[in-house]
Length: 444
Image (cartoon, rainbow, N blue to C red; front, side, top):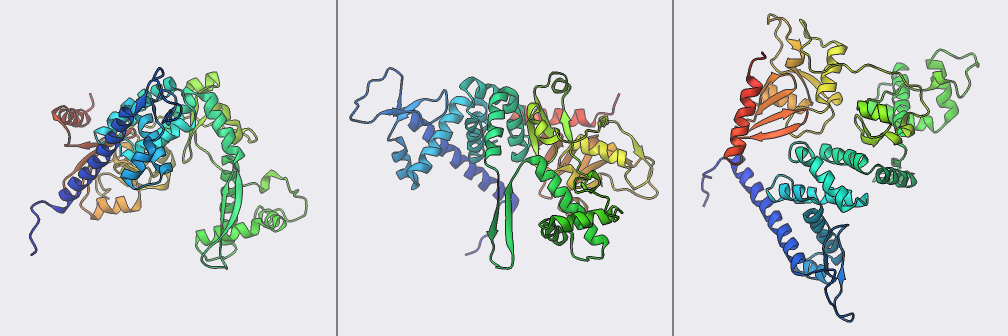
């Protein structure tokens, strides 16, 4: 017999998600407790013939019984290897990342995400103290930013806390470079995969784009993706590619050499450097669309290139214009301010998005409608959701966005991340109210 649900579907989805998260938390706590029950101390006595203590986790974790993984594997119906990895990640979280562990236990960070982060840290061979420092410095971002942004921030902190180890990891990664051709389900189509230097990848991608544009100028009506695929084939014959580039540049008299810089594509990289890193030569920088990098490794990207210094535009001013079109300078301000899409928890880069007028532009509206406090980067789907899908958006101050979903859930989004509003204890709700009042308070 069918019965009408007593709760809206969106609320039932939220409750089911909460129950699943709690079950994963309970499992993680049970594994941590089981490891504690079967732990050993440095002065414990044990029989050389029987079970022995081993350290499954990284520096600073407890010694556990060597047969612990067998117990967990049988209980969870998984392999012993998978059980070993699971125990390793849980004991690492509990001992080396107490703040991340706390955010995992309260449901802010999913268990599988917390495990991946703990594994990332352990893979860099961080000591117990280094892992604890990273945990403390990462705390403000926990639950506030998307997973990709959180992982990039963690990698940046690793480069800051343990630069030598980060450089060693980068060196090892460069040793694992490759280019491989794989078959697909159609014998006429192959799949090319590569693990290469980031700089080479950037310039190769720019060259593919350049040749794809030349093909379009020559009358090729295929899509950009198809023309980029054709460009790979053209680059496979360097003489043909060089001639095509020379002709496009207007040099066909045979005087252009193979190494002429006029044949090179134009590639732009946005590299964010703190003043301290510039002055000391130490620290980290951030490459838009790529992630953090130790400053000492920057030469791998730009050491063989000419550098053009561009002054940083102050992104939070309220400069605006009286027409719908967005000037390049204002667009750059928004890109620097927001860096990622302003939809809750999005990790999509701002430069890949449209710039949306928070309050829709009208021909007979007030002056300055196209300004920093009325613009934000949105993907096509999020833009349509705002325009046609009953998602409501407010930007009380430049770079601060309040969303309300069709189901009534609310979110606060800033360049630092997303905060879900209206949930949690009394203190969290009071903080939500304080933020709203502060954000909507008129300047001055």
